[in-house]
Image (tube, rainbow, N blue to C red; front, side, top):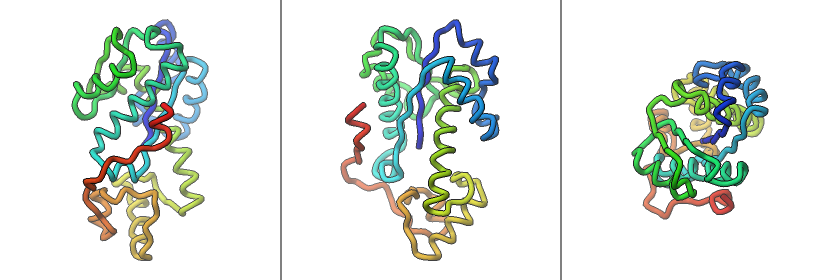
Length: 209
């Protein structure tokens, strides 16, 4: 999983619209790659990632909140601190109050924080972050194709992804790039497992953030 944080001066939001920034789900991979290059000169961004093992170890919303906080904390270092920020907008997931509390802990005590449904379809700056996250994911999937022979997009609705998973499971393989608490794995007869009760996994980037 990849999450991204994107910052831009208010006066340059129109520039995002001019280069075609909109909800990343409406864009092709090629369009995302093109826009990714253009928005890099309009604003600044950072990303944070979560491995399948992290997601398998605890609640997905908690993992996502931690990664959003990490991406924002990194971004604040780049732009010169939380005092540079007047507004933060997050595409809603989980409990909005918990997301806001996590972001306040980065030092954003004065900025307005909005957590809204479908924010990536309503705000160009959120759409820009979504494009960054999906482009980085696209690039990493390409690496996994060369390493593991992955087919498809990696999403459960993709028949190519399901076909690849069936082949992997039929061979008795358990590559580390799969979420084994994913219900799709259970449905396809793979080594499905429940969320563990162990202490959540932390990665080096969590501590460096």
